[in-house]
Length: 396
Image 1 (cartoon, rainbow, N blue to C red):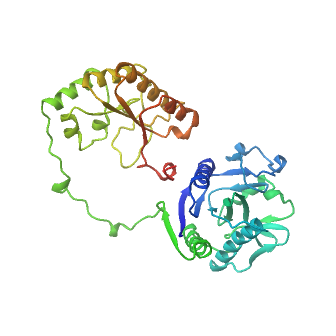
Image 2: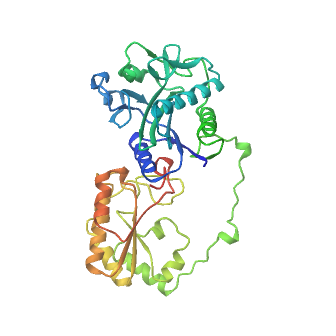
């Protein structure tokens, strides 16, 4: 079985933890998640609060209690975090042997990257250069499956370690690859760790996927723009009676459709057939995804009468299946979730036999906001994955 390696880029700690749990609970495959976190301090199950020396908010960091072993540690940009989610053969010393294997992976990677002096320090987990810790290890093994893992300091802002007692160890220093004179870009470190991990846990077989690495391409390599789209991508505009009637319905009820606002090329076919996708919460989005045509100027207040107008349109159009989406509304506390719930309820009141499908934004991942949509019980719930990497880690 191959080791499934994923480079996820920069991921909030809570999001990565949720992904780990989902994979740990539902997948029997072996995975290695490689990523960075924004500034965060995490407390293991045996951590002491007094080892956090400042209010984390005052230094621009979060503080999160988690279910790994160990004390307090820091994660942030410039630190490679690895979460192996593996089947661990159980038996005497199974967990110490597994931790030893994680340490050895990092030791081997550091040697290949130009730091051959890294190793272990008796009685102290992790990877050390002399008496300076370069990589923290904190794992959890339950029912023969592992979670959490290692945090290798490549080139983080070392000042963040000054605000804690790292791993609860007061008399030992923390270092980094950069601090030890090794100048290695994160992409190279990931490549080496991924390959060695595949050798160790995948018998040399890996299935790897990365989110896009940031790169600047020389302009000489750019392709020239062309003035016309190729014929096969051009759509004939057919605005017959059915199209005009549906447009009149939308204008008279002051409704917005994603068909129009996103410039969908299928609008002529769909509107001819009397169908459309309603876009609630206005026509202005608070995000600016590069692939999207929707307006990103300052949004107007939420229109609380809109749900009933959508329901009236569904009734007038005689829809058996209504599809409702929305712009992202990061400017309102619930991300627009309440309007989704109200629209579902309004359609159900007027058209109880109509199935309701919603295509929702992420509501910034707020559980209470998303729960409001779930509680309205749409027949189908979708979420677009065609967006920035931090929002599309995996289908959970």
